[in-house]
Length: 194
Image 1: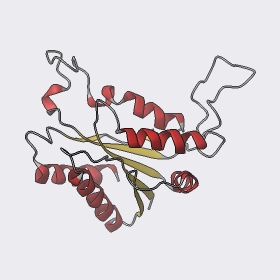
Image 2 (image 1 turned 90 degrees about the vertical axis):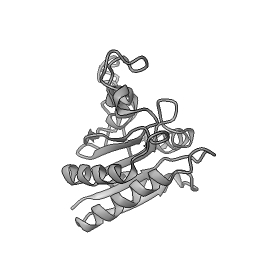
Image 3 (image 1 turned 180 degrees about the horizontal axis):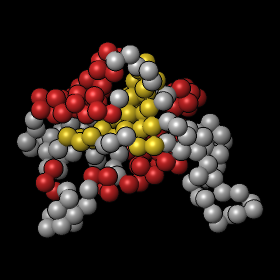
């Protein structure tokens, strides 16, 4: 069985307390523990110890990032986590710099990851409806997929040498939420990925 680190990246706002993301974290913990996986779960809203977080990433075989989508990306508190934890890990714990070497300074940018063989999964909660994606007639995303939108986050994990599991998403969570259906889909998604 695997070691699984679950990161709850929710940041509370008056219009969003974080109940959905917390529930998804709880489901992941319960489902994966029942399958025999070892679980560590953290919330970026709590005090973070950088060396502990680096060790969590080294310990984990799989990292699940559970996050709301705020302005097409992660909340600022997770960006702060990345700036502190991931930058501190660039000395070899998470990657060896940016992967380039003096004998080929223009090649292999981003190939210095030391977490090869490890995986990650994005689990996202959107205000956007599912129909806003993968449809060229839709105004904002112009036919782009969820993974197209989240390409920068995929590259952050790839920078460490990690491989992606299939992304999960809950849609329209503020105007037409269907949490029970989302929980069922999430459970099935975890079953298919773990």
